[in-house]
Length: 453
Image (cartoon, rainbow, N blue to C red):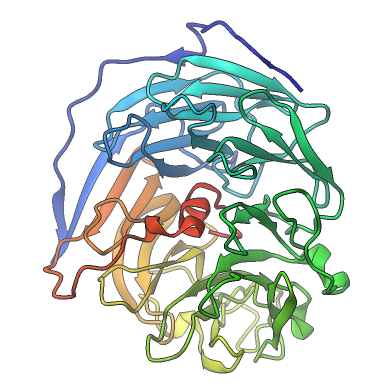
């Protein structure tokens, strides 16, 4: 694998005059929204999605957006920086951004990289989009993730070839660092990475955990359920290192929510219904009075055995539940008992923790399931819909953009707009550290997807 210089093609990277930034507008009492147009197709069924990263070094978060055949960069205000409309190879169905960003060569500038095809990584200047080289791979890759494996910063790339086969390369030269077939990944999701053991270097998480040097860390075996794991979150469930890996089994009535760490299986919590698997998980401080973090289990809602009926709105009905850091059940309910009347009976999707109000108790951000629809803030323990963001969102992304001890909601919409919703109410709570201070937050917000937001 070698990195070679490439010539900037006028047809590949387009630079347009920046549009004037639009101020935010009131949406509802205490909520404001600003929007900007995409200069590319909206991320949809063909894959792709947004993530936030400081591309131009001004200290503010910008936006990287991928969609079918396109990779675009927009500054913090929404003005387009550049657009690649050449080959962009996307993970086909998991709503994954399929791009990475960081100072890949250590020159002090930010780069963006993606798969141009299954065997070629193209590297672009983060601010201008100018071609900065490419890396050739020996086999067909399905996904990439940025990593710090050598202690030199985010200058390495994890390459995923299959659910079990991953490799690591240097981002500047393409030199192979290691390769392994001992990974056990998530069925529908690209790999997930973070500094799990607190050594300052990234590990790769799944139903097995791969150290920064490519060595398998765990001796435990979760069994044959690993092949159909449906969702993964890396979080500090039990305070202090190592971090834990939360996994959602997909085995119907006998499914567990598993929490693992490099040295042990922390817990295996059987689902509290007799007909659902956890399907998608979100982890947050949903009850600050309890030690550690809580785990929201969305439920599959699509297996056709929901007990309240075989017709709409019950046929795909979701019955979420929440467990604490010991695996004890805190709550379970039906989404249909709490949603607005007009909200789809199929429930919620792209569910992720968010601190919307800055009070220390996390909420959920999500969108309507199985359609382009509205987004919402939901109370995880009660199911209450606390805030509604109207529209026909194709993606929803919770992120700390403003640095006001709260997080914002970003949507891409069928109408071609990106919208940023923020809580404009006075925040009476004391300032809190930015979640960006957590390395696992940085990793999650760049490497997310439908199954594991």
